[in-house]
Image 1 (cartoon, helix red, strand yellow):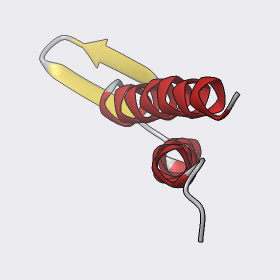
Image 2 (cartoon, one colour):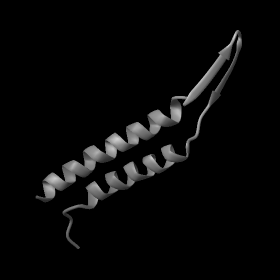
Image 3 (tube, one colour):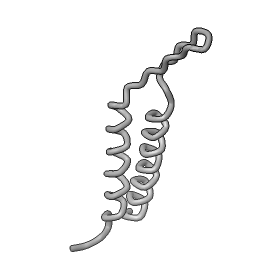
Image 4 (cartoon, one colour):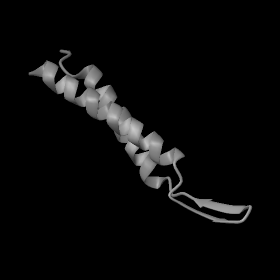
Length: 67
């Protein structure tokens, strides 16, 4: 059972990390008028998603280890 929990945490961690990085890079809204363009982003949720992904990856390393 510890191995399955470890695998689930690893997959969830990688998925959250990938999604967080994608949302940080991809613009939410953009407007182009001729040669003039504006892009807007709100990265607050991306930082939270990346942090949760890192926590899940760290938890997957320590699951099943006995003190």
